[in-house]
Image (cartoon, rainbow, N blue to C red; front, side):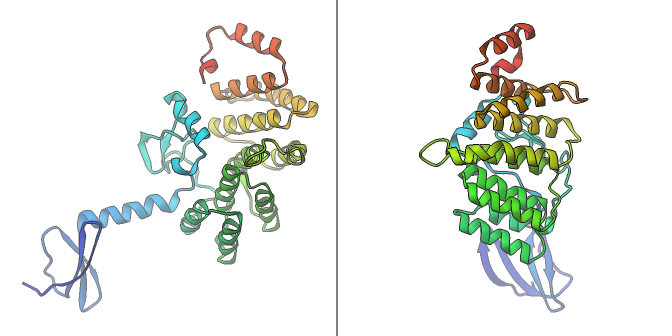
Length: 302
């Protein structure tokens, strides 16, 4: 038997170095130099490579990265509004409402090279840390739409308004094409960030919502699939509700009329979001009419 030099143990599997030879233990695979072979079990190697393949493309938020209130709302939604989780096309995620599995998702604007940077951005614990990670990605010339999208999501979850606007400005300076998905993330983050950590809606931010939201909506091309279309519609309607001004209500009505004549069908989440806008502006008669016209509507339970 060839001599074995144990090099360490990690999470239940052992890594050994053995002299280079055709011989390998049963169930082991060798990776090595002309003189030494790094010996590792096939199952362990498959797990490592599988984890790398999945995590390299992941740009969605994990449940623990989502605010508790938002997580509860997502978990309580019907399964018909949930989607396959990252890299697992046959498993439904509790907090995912858009396709994120590589089997279903469009990888445009998202590269494997930026995978590690996205993970670091999602783990940022302060605005300074987030800006640092984004700056590093820019210096390494791997900043793409997924980097900007990840940073925007973190800003929205943590209500980092100033950092959110800085990231948006940076994407313009670097001429990064954002596309409909990141646009939806940005509009959602704007509405979330209008609130402070302790004192509710901040008027100075609220006054900027409509201008910033419409600017992003008009600047980026329309969605090319039903899920992104409905996600964008819901984000824009939510922003109109938070803005709480007459021109925002006008835009919400305009958006709804536009959405109803598109080739994509408005889903239950879109209906519930529009009703929320009408409720926030005290247009109760319109809400009652919508419910009466739709009969027993599934969107009233979302």
